[in-house]
Length: 473
Image 1 (cartoon, rainbow, N blue to C red):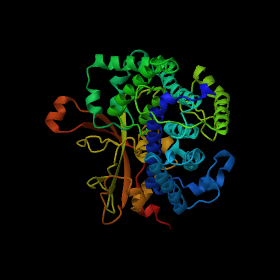
Image 2 (tube, rainbow, N blue to C red; image 1 turned 90 degrees about the horizontal axis):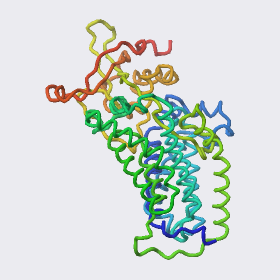
Image 3 (cartoon, rainbow, N blue to C red; image 1 turned 30 degrees about the horizontal axis):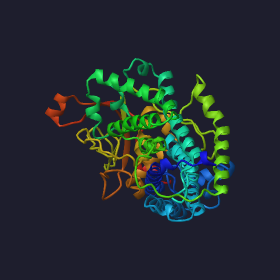
Image 4 (tube, rainbow, N blue to C red; image 1 turned 135 degrees about the vertical axis):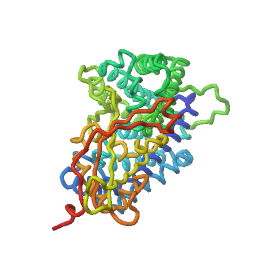
């Protein structure tokens, strides 16, 4: 089938696969380094308890067969090692069937993690990585020409990411239609980056241009991904440019980088010389690719219906395998930034003169003089969830009190997720959580105080927790 092969995309496929494997690597390392505190046997929301109440059919995972922290670590580090090997080109040096098995194993391992990850893995980029990783199984390797149907499926995935995000904005917060959302967003986004302060202070007319360009990129450009070349390449480059702008302006885990990876599926590299010679495409591979294409076409009914609905949902998976999902982000933008600040004291009795010491998180705002750091594509899960906790105490109810109790115990795994432990020698006697209103300082305030943030106490976030009350009677 001559129409099946698209050799002109050989370089795009190579870069796409290596970059996708690198995203997998970040995801597996993130899981390996953070799971014990979050979903481990003694974590904030323990996976064993989840596995006891949720059946396999509702959350397919290898861990339904067996769970232990040691086994989870083995799965995560195996995924990281395999991802690193594929990033370095191992999947191109083996037969096609073995290459497909390597990609399939990555997908199964990460699906197993996401499906028991509970609230810590409820982000849209988890489903996006799984869907892209599943399609990569059918992208072939250096032994065969890139299959056109799989490239089109990757573009269809990119279309849903961009167009879904554009629709949810246009239908959602009125500030998107008024072109004013970026007057607030750079300051109130979940985890600002080192340039977010500067983006926030761009002239307001430029913020209007940013929003207008976003609408064009997300509502018009996605259709051009399916146009003849070189239009499709131009559309992909427009997406790439927009995503790099977002990378510079904040920390959104691997969402932006993975979107860039998907855009490579539309970049024609036929002008690049020294294209490799591909062997004949096996019939069984063609059949498998066509079968997956039909499957995606059938499953697309649900995300298409969602995008056309006035009650469009963001980041929804319609099946437990996270295939053919719907995507979207920031349908509404918060105008004020609130942060939950956790403090502790080693004084046994709390009085008006008690000295409280603050726990510092790695990524979320805390110390007003500390410039936000760049963490993406690495995902600080606890820091992100603390942003949601400030928005809604009920959202954090399943784990927040347990977090405070872990701090009273000086839990080693939880403390590893934090930037500082103000009680290195002995656990605190009491901890408390306060709610602050944060805002970026002005240029004048930055010059005079050296502070990137200004904060004002709103009040207690909840009742204090004491070590004595937490100890068994």
